Structure formats: structure tokens, C-alpha cells
Image (cartoon, rainbow over the protein chains, first blue to last red):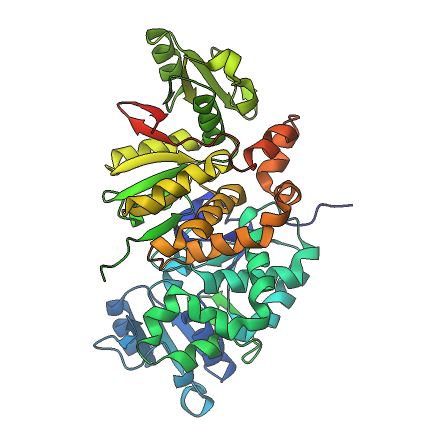
Amino acid sequence: MPQKPFLHTLLSPRLLDLYDVKDSIVVIIDVFRATSTIATALYNGAKKVVPVSGVEDCIAIGKKLEAITAGERDGKIIEGLQHGNSPAEYHRSFIEGKTLVLTTTNGTKLLHMALERDAEKVITGSFPNLSAVCHHLASSNKNVILGCSAWKDRFNLEDTLFAGAVISQVKKYFTIHCDSSLMAEDMYQLHCKNIYSFIKKTTHWHRLAGYGLEKDLEYCVTENVADILPVYKDGALIIH
Amino acid sequence: MPQKPFLHTLLSPRLLDLYDVKDSIVVIIDVFRATSTIATALYNGAKKVVPVSGVEDCIAIGKKLEAITAGERDGKIIEGLQHGNSPAEYHRSFIEGKTLVLTTTNGTKLLHMALERDAEKVITGSFPNLSAVCHHLASSNKNVILGCSAWKDRFNLEDTLFAGAVISQVKKYFTIHCDSSLMAEDMYQLHCKNIYSFIKKTTHWHRLAGYGLEKDLEYCVTENVADILPVYKDGALIIH
């Protein structure tokens, strides 16, 4: 019987070089809120989402593509950009048929790191598109890295919980020799029944809830409400 | 009321610069097996334990101090050294009154990193000296970093479980805004009742059990069987 492909969970961008990115599908996870927003914008009909690292790039590319520019730092819209990182902003009547250029603190950084290391494929995941991610991984027969974007390189719980949710669904298709993955699955199993109350204990909740973003954060941990698969191709995330 | 000091959990040496080491007590944790062996050797009467990074240093310092040299790579004693990393080797009739010079893959590396960053105090912890570590931290009124040595910079479960065991006992004395610490405590609470069977799932168990070290690993997760506090002072770990 051929060996099943490997699945690893990356807990911080700082550890990316410890993993074999080249032969893997890398799932970029930034639950609060980049990858929740990306899934939502595409689900609601956005033509594509262009993830960029810096604010200047965001403005320049936005102008060139006649696109909507968006980005926040510390829960506030960055000066010079038009919109924020909230998935609630990207309802169908606003985003359908448009291109979104998005810059965020953690998620876009890890995405570009994975691209620089020649990841075989880059997709993005969060609870709103959990099923789409799981179906793709289960049927791909490729090595997988579940890449938690973390918070300025520090471990965070919400990305880990999403990694655990994926592992719970797809583990029978993979060889998993990875303590990060065992932990992520345990944490998801422990808290999946009470996830809305559990996330209120996380450091990120305390950081963002001060800006009145509680509803946003609850949406970001709601499963399958924007269940499409964003795949990176030719400089943008599009629906697979 | 004055604010309680902060407690953080470090999941990989690679992330050390994200934390304020200078104003903290750093607890070096390398459950399999460096810090279990250090506690055991000191508990059994070793005069001191000198932790060194490299094999050549180990041999040179061992000669100079007329000390016992010890170190392993991949579960085997390194050529040129006299003993291994097993706590079982350091019973009282052998180690009492002697100096041990020890090199290991992960634990001694993190210890030296913490020293280079001017940690206020460096102590070592593992399950055999859990209580001594907790008593010290609870009474110190200082910021604390629980430093998991990990495995070649990758997250590991056994060090995380020990961090969780400490947090369970001392959390009321600290301000904890740290997702790593919340996770570590959850993982300890989830598995503390069945820790001997749980550690058989870890990647490190699979790595070392192949060398016949099962009894060793079980000892390393047994609480308070060598309950002293190793503190780094003048180049060596001694009993506090």
C-alpha cells in the first residue's frame, strides 16, 4: 500500500523553513480576519482578491486594477485605503464583480512567504469555508501544511482551532507525525461545542473586541457560511 | 492593587526574541530528557551540572574540571563522551559529589540563548521537579517565561504539558494574556490523568522508544521524584 501523504501544522510563520513547502499544498489560515474576509468576498461574487504585503503596494495596485483597496492595522482602516478587514463589509451588493486588493498584518505575510518558497499550491482557509478546504485536501493526495498566520509570529488559538477542525475531518487521508497537529486536533475537539464562548478567552478577542468587533469575530468562527475554495493563481486569489 | 507579574509560554527557541527575556525568570524545559536528567543528578547529590552546547566544549571542560562528560545524539552516547542523557544513569552511588558536564540537542541550546539575552534568572524544570519550580515562581513576584526547548525548533507536546502543569499550579499569581499558556494549560488538564498513555502518541516517544527508552520517558513525566530547583549561577546549574 502506498504511503499516505504527510500533513503538518505550522504554528508561526517564523517556523516555515522547518517544513518542506515545495512539495506541499499550503493552507494559509488567518481566522481573525484575513482569510475569513477572503472567503466571504469571493463567495459573494468578487472577481478576485489580490493579497499584498504593504500599504503602498495596496494603493498602487488598487489604482492600476481599478479595484477596491482594503486594510487595517489595530482594528482601524489604514489612511489612504477605502475599506477595512471586516467580512461584513463585503456583501454581494457591494463586492460582486469587483476586485479587492487587501493588506493585513499576518495572513498576507505568510502567504507571500509560502509563495517565495515555491509552495506547490497556496489556498486559504477559515471556518466560513471549512468544508471546501477539507474536500480539496482529502481528494488531492498531496502533502499538506496547515499554516497558522499567528499574531506577529506569536502562536494564536483561533488559527490553531481551524487547523484542528481540518485535521478532524481529513486525518484518515494523511500520515501525521507532528505534535502541532495532535495538539490542534485536541484543542478543536475540546472546544468545538462551545467555540463562541471559548474564543472570548483568546488574546486576539481582547485585542479586537475593544473595537466593537464581537459580531465579526463570531462570524469568523462560524462553519461553512461562505463555502468556496480560494486558490492563488497569477497574483490573486480566485475561486477554485 | 499592583498588577501581578506576567507569565508567557514560549513554544520554540526560534520565538525567544518576541518576549521580554531581560526582566524575566526563564524556566528551561526539556522533558525528554535534559532537564529531567539535570534535576535527577542534582537531587542525587551532584555538585553541579555544567550545560554546554557542543561536544568539543564538553570534552575540554570535562577534562579541566575532572568531571563526568555526557551527551547523546539520536539516543546514542556521543563518541568521546563517557555517559548518556538518561536520568537513570545518575543514581546517588554514581553521581554524589561529582560535577557533570552535559550537552544535549535542544535544552542546552535554549538555556544559552536565554543567558545571551540577559535573562534575570535561569532555572530548569521538568516533571520530576515540578513542585520546586512552582513554589519558586509563586513566591518570586517576577515575570516568568516558560521556555519549551522543543525539538530542533519544532513544537513538542511533552514540554508544553509541563508548562501547562506549572500554569495549573501558579496561575493565580500571574497576569496571563498569552494563547500559548491557555493552550498549554488545556492540554495538561486534558491529559494529566492519563499522561503515561498520552505521551506514547508524541513524535518524540516514537523517536526515542525505538532505542528502548520507554522506562526513561515514563520517569521523565513522573511528578516530584527529584524535587529540587536547579538555578544557573557562575556557569553551572546548582541547587537553589
